[in-house]
Length: 419
Image 1 (cartoon, rainbow, N blue to C red):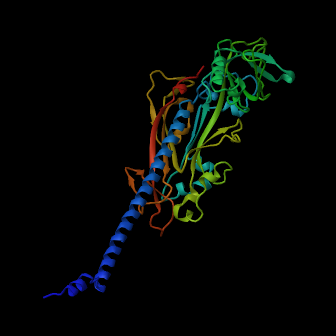
Image 2: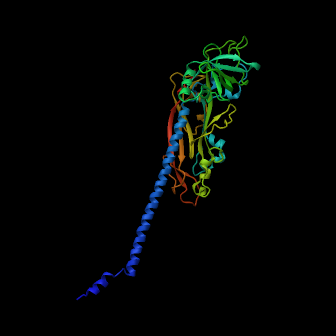
Image 3: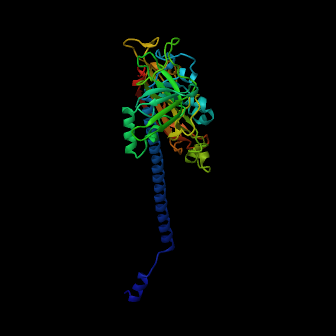
């Protein structure tokens, strides 16, 4: 018979050492499994967040690029060298005689920034990014009508009429609590081209380069003056010339502001504006390859093809490749052949760069990469790369995933010389 005292001793009995070791071991295994599951889930989430950011960068970059491509030759010439309305009285600088609405250069980014693109051009990746220069009225859809005056020393000054275009821009200024000068200044920037449209009066198509801009006078009766460089000096029509402006007011001739925008891939790690944004972590860059990252940039070109200070924009981060193909219509001299048969020239075809006035659509391929490598092996399907090598062996995870977007952009303004 069990006594009450014996029962109390049994109830107070604890775990044995073996039971305690087994329990601790089981608990440790469960904790390790939970930790491993959590780690893998966190890593998966971070990798997917990075590839989502990559997709967003490609989308934003493609949207900006295609919007600009659609304005190629807008209120401008598609190729001044073949423009039958161009007034050539006197010598024209190369910046005007060689002005295009679209200029693609195969492997142009590599030619301009070879040291920046050593990852892309490495044999593991085999990429050779292009560049493109787009010319047109990029900042406004307005044409402006003018009156004409002469200034001291033969310098030309264009007075704009207060017509519908100015009225619409004055409304924009009012809606944004700005002055008319503040709205016009980003359009009539120094160094941009001013194109005088041929309107059948015999003056032909004329070009000048803006050197100054000024708005004076009371609201509603402003005087808007655009001063042009003396080179080229706008010709005046006389008995010895076949084209040029008349010695009268030339009132009603339309002008448009033409600029040129370049897109290419380059490193921005030393850029004074974006350098901090794209700077790699020095403690991990050997494992991520970020020290050799490149970006898709947009920059305005001056008449001498130099880059306009302060105009560079970061369009897509971690861009890895940029390629262009084109569809062209055949040309007969400077006129389009009747009912033409279109020909498509694929990526890397040297004919992509020729006869820009014949291009009717552009095919764009833009690739962006993830920031951190997360794959051990390459992946290529149907000739298309899905991964990008950023570091060398023996590091295992040395491939990052790519996101590639394709777009076909029609060039309506490149089908003929715009007015």
